[in-house]
Picture 1 (cartoon, one colour):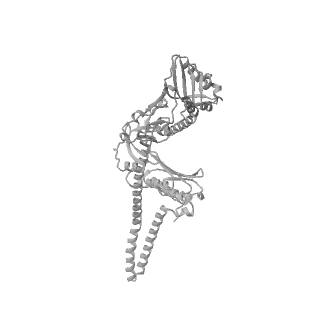
Picture 2 (cartoon, one colour):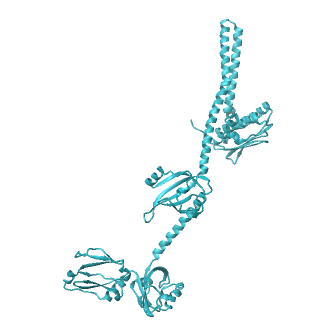
Picture 3 (cartoon, helix red, strand yellow):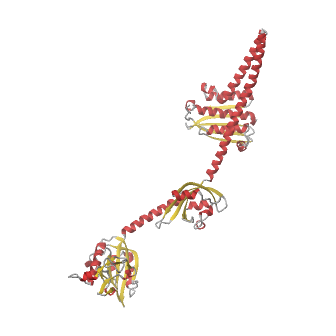
Amino acid sequence: MLFCKIILLHPARNLHKIKTHVGLIRFWMLPVAQHRIHRCAEHNQRRGNCFITSLRVITFTSAKSIMEQDTLHIPDDHELLRSIVDFTPDAIISSNEKGLLVYWNQAAEKMFGYTADEVIGCDMAETLLPNDLQDRVRAVFTQGPPQVPRYGRAVRSKARRKDGTIFDVELSLSCRCNGQKGFYTAIVRDITDTVSCENRIACEKEYLEKVIQRIEDGFFVCDQKGYITRINKKAETLIGYPHDEIIGRHVTDFVADGFKPGTFLLDLYEAGYVENYTSTWQRKDGTSWNIEASISLMQDDENAVFAVSTIRDISDKVKLDEVKKRYHARVFLMREQEKKRFSQRLHDALSPAAISVSAKLRFLENALAENNTSKAREMIDDIESTYMESLSTLRHIAIQLRPGTIDQLGLAITLTRECVEISESTGISVTPKINIDEDRISESVKTVVYRVVMEALGNVIKHSGARHAIVHLKVHRSKYLLLEITDDGKGFDVQKVLQGDMDEITLGVTGMVENIEGINGTISIESSETGTRIAASVPLWIEEARE
């Protein structure tokens, strides 16, 4: 025993009935909604029973309770139709088979700016559509019977208001025909804001796509099973495969060293991202390369999990790290060898002198015991001579580390004296060309430059067989000190020396490199059969270490 309190809109021939033991219940319902009705309450409930359409909830109450009321007003069918059409938020317009407007509701007046009196009987295409769409719509009306499906799908188009502005609409078009006669009905919705939002989203997607394509890292998107669904141009370049040969493949297909998830996947699923993950991949040509990846887990609108990853080629970095490790190992070994060499020089210089002094002291003791003053005086003179020789040796070693004349006379005079002394003692012509302002050079830089020059000249004397050498030192752009040492000797294999065993030549050359780079400088060594050139650039000033 149910009675319909709310009815739905549609022409009279779509009137529906519910038969009960108290009579027939009539209600209106749009045909497009008929298949969407769902029962949502049990029939044995006396009140609150309802069913739902795609348009609204229709509530039923007990027919008996309504019948018991003294008065019951059942509105006319056309009255119900009019009330719904007038108050719907969408514009509802109708035209005949000639394209002339025959119906115009209140929502249409608000949307287009025309009153019903202004548009009824007017050509729909000319009144409501932009110029470029009018001919296409008129063609529909000139084809005879309506060609539009009975219940059309929602489509998007352009419309024109009374003030001439063009706006976006979404309309559902249906038709009714009887032979050559018929009419069209359209439900129109203003989607200007929707289209504006969609345009903004499209612009943002286009911008994001440009960013993705232009980044220097490879960009990957994988589904939750690890299959690649999207990449950028850089990813194609890094892997060496074209786009079509990458999409759809599993990411592990490109791993060269065997994929070992372990902690990596655990960290990814727990934290939702992993940074600086390293692995080795293989290109299409078979070459291996080192990658560093950052991976994040995300969810799409349907809560499906996918992974976004950026990867970069760190092969050069890995190689550089390996070179640095070997270099630091060689530097450590070189320092140990330098300590050993310095210790050996001290031992060779002082040990014989100490033994000699010890023996002469015993002779002196015997001479004094025998009251042999002349013998005692001779021993004292020998001991004094040995002492002075040892002191001279120690001073020479100390000067090689840092000569005191740098503090007293300056770097330029010290280097000039060294060049003159080498020329006089070896017969090799060493020409100094020094033009510097010493007040602008820090003490640490002076010490390093002196050591490099002396090491280079030492190699010239011992190994090159050169007859001439030049030491050129000058200031460049008021920021750098440029050092150049050249000779006309037989030269040597620079790479072989730098990578060879820790002999005296290797220690010397590696020491020069370490000293220059230790003060943020650069050095290059070129050598051939016609001579050797050492060029270095160091900053004029560095902060001195505080003790």
